[in-house]
Amino acid sequence: MKTILSKHIAAGILSSLVATTGMAAELTVTVKGIAKAEGNLIVNVYKESDDWLSLDAGAATKTFVVDLTKAESLNAIKVKADLPKGVYAATAIHDLNSDGKLGKNWMGIPQEPVGQTGDSKKLMGPPKFKASAFAVEEAAVAQEIVIVGY
Image 1 (cartoon, helix red, strand yellow):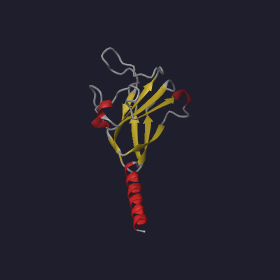
Image 2 (cartoon, helix red, strand yellow; image 1 turned 135 degrees about the vertical axis):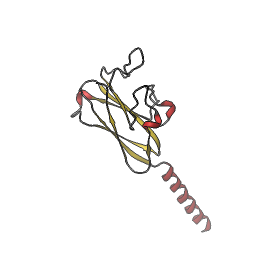
Image 3 (cartoon, one colour; image 1 turned 90 degrees about the vertical axis):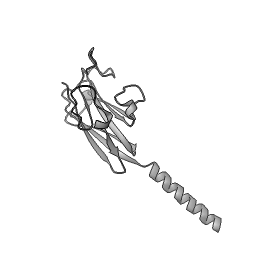
Image 4 (cartoon, helix red, strand yellow; image 1 turned 45 degrees about the horizontal axis):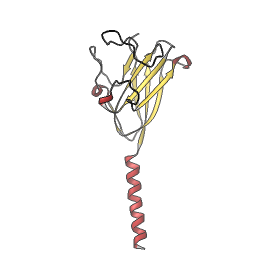
């Protein structure tokens, strides 16, 4: 009887630990300001600041590619993902030529419209992870990105 009770207690503790460490919350990213129904919208969600802004395969925690030629409306494109607790930041690129890359000029300045989460209004240089970061806890999280650069 004592061992049966011990096993039930241990199982209860383990299941509660698994439930709390593996919990995910739904993130909804709404992208606004898209001016043209051409190309793709690429939304990348990053968890690590080391990978921030990298377009290398696997750098982003989640990547969404939306074909804008098939979008019903350009007013607000939404993507959703279940993410574990943590600090994240997201970017959006209007990939006008659908090449999967951010077009830049010889100085490295984006030639395709871009945006990121947070209220980073930096005019010189790329946005910082910290300025674009948001927390994902147990409740659903909504973030907005406004595309600029048309």
